[in-house]
Image (tube, rainbow, N blue to C red):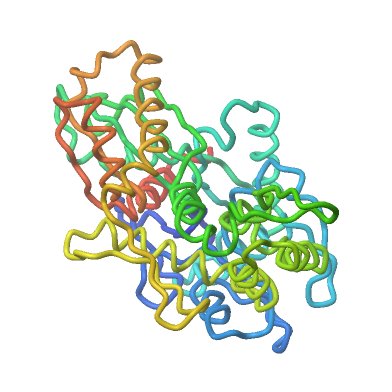
Length: 417
């Protein structure tokens, strides 16, 4: 039996679903978990590519290979079509995304007993903010990845509109709801209301390229990178004058999608040179260690886990644990510092929500509900930025991590003629 598979291909996590007896059904791709990490690991010893939790486990176990995460963030950039040798093959990043999607397809078919020739894929309202060319190219790249993955046809649905579909059962006449979808790489918004019977009316959709990985990056730059030498004084090769260590290497090390590009002789040589000429070389020595031992992703995971714990009301003293640098190393994440460092990003998200309302010519007081979806929507600073701007709206969370794939599964009924 051939059908249409709904795929939520996310920056951090992915999921798949189908419509079964007129109800959305999530297909578990990894054990019983409803989502799977959007990660790949090219295992140099086993000569194969692992995906999902197995990829992350291989990285954390110290297996020899190349780990990649945040590939969705590369869509539309020139990096997507740059090729490199991996396990004896020359692959570009469209190939790598395609192989991840092909594995999603294979697992979904194995679990469901169906064959999926078509896919309804979620997509951000905007892959890139303020760059129409990149935004268009991102969709071209993702379409090609689905084709290479073995799908005969692919259609796309804006992710917050999929979440709106998933929430239509709770919609009452007179409600005007704003979906706030804070994903790993983008934040997307859909304003919707009752459209009669079981239908919804999409009033407006908008998006901005700010997401959970940007919060990770900001925390990493503020708290971790100074421990690796960011801001350190470096002696000039000649004379006694000094300059600050260049920020580029630290900014890339704090960015999920760019970490794999740092593991090469040129970057290591540059870091070693900085250590050699640093007034206080101890911290630069840590940078050299991170590059030599390829610990960039370990640090990124530690920052992400620290961010999550800082938003857990049960955790009184959240920290970033950096045992990979030094046994017992901890960096605290006090609430005041979190608010100070992350409020600008949260405000960008809040301003994008206001733009959505302006496009619809709707006053904030008219919005009855804020529907939060996406893992990063659980952050306090994000909720505060939105509730401050829409004080009359009631907060509704629902299935924050699976609303999009539920809506995509529902959308498969009408995605193709």
